[in-house]
Structure formats: structure tokens, C-alpha cells
Amino acid sequence: MKKILIAVPYHERKKYCLDQLYRSINNLSTTTKKAGFEVEVLVRHDLNEFGAPDNVKKQREFFRQQVLVNDHDYLFFHGADTIPPADAIVKMINSGYGILSGVYWQRGENKAMNAIAWFGNDPDEKNIKMQDQFNNHSQIRVDGFGLDCVLISRSVLEQISWFDWPVNDDDYPFCDKATELGFELFIDTSIQCQHWDTPKSYSYNAKFFIH
Image 1 (cartoon, helix red, strand yellow):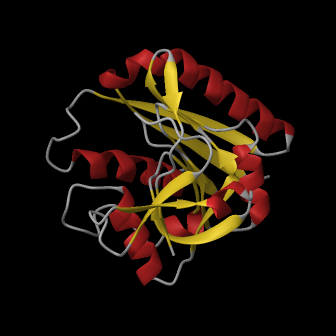
Image 2 (cartoon, helix red, strand yellow):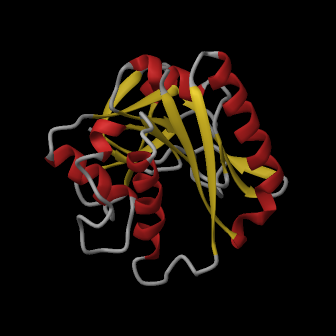
């Protein structure tokens, strides 16, 4: 039986979406267990500010170590304000990819028709372009994505630590290191998440780097 750790880095700033988060975790866990997988959920409350030295990396590395120590097969990162479909984990595991992300959406926008991506190797180069293909519900190879709805296999986690890079960042350096080691990164555009901005609103703009 495959074991999955659903990991949620949490900070007090995200308390406005706690109700949505708990419902999402319950739905994900229930659906994944029904599919025959073993599920553990770990929500880590972080009392420090996000900008504290190495804090972001420490959060991610803590969850990675839990997977390795407790013999999980997969790590699923669930953003505190990001709500995936209930069948997201099952679809990701069945895809067979070592690293697969859903489409989670940038807050503060309202463009449900198309996803937005930025191009280039520099994560600060946000050359935004509308892409009709992202609505085709397909799996697309990309250069990187955020870590709020992503399944990572144990074989990947055994080779990559969040302390492999000097900056206090988590998503782009991880994707860059994975690519350097020969892992391919994919998004599944059929796994489209809500990304909550306020207690009453969420938005639809995807966050990933197209390959």
C-alpha cells in the first residue's frame, strides 16, 4: 500500500481560510483512502514570520525529513490557502510522474478563461502570456511551479534537500535542482485549484514556468 504524507505549512496569516483548508484536507484524505492508499496529514504551525532567516527552507525540509524517516512513498504539499480537487492526489499518483503539480492560481486576479504563465529561467522575469492550451486538461512539461499543490515521490526527495541552495526560497530553487538532476517537471491542467485571497473570494491565474 502506497503511503502519502499530506503536508501543510501553516502561518497565522492564513487563518482566514482555515475552514476551507480543513474541508479540503478531509476531502483529499477521504478520496485518497478510498482509492486504496494510506494517508497521513501533518500541519505545521509556524510561529515565525515568513521572512525569518532560512524559515521557508526549514519548513519544507522538515516535511521532507518526515517522509524519509517514516517511509512514505510520496509527499503532497498542500498550501494553506490553496484548495485542490478531492481527487488530485489519486490522479497524480496514477500519472506515474515523480514530480507533478496541479494548477494553483495567483491571488488578486479574476481570469478564469485562461491560465497565465511566465517564461524564462529567471523566476523574476515574468513575461506573462495567455495560453489557450492550458485549458485542454493535459499534462505539460514545465520549467517550474509553486509548491502549493504538488506531489513529489520519495525517490526525488532522497536526492534533493531544501538546503541545497543559499537563498531562503522554496519553489523555484527546488524545481531548478530537480531539473539539474535529470527529473522532469509536469503540471496537470485538469487539476485546477482555488487559491483563497480573502474569506469570501478566490482567484484563477496559474503559477508555473512553461518549458
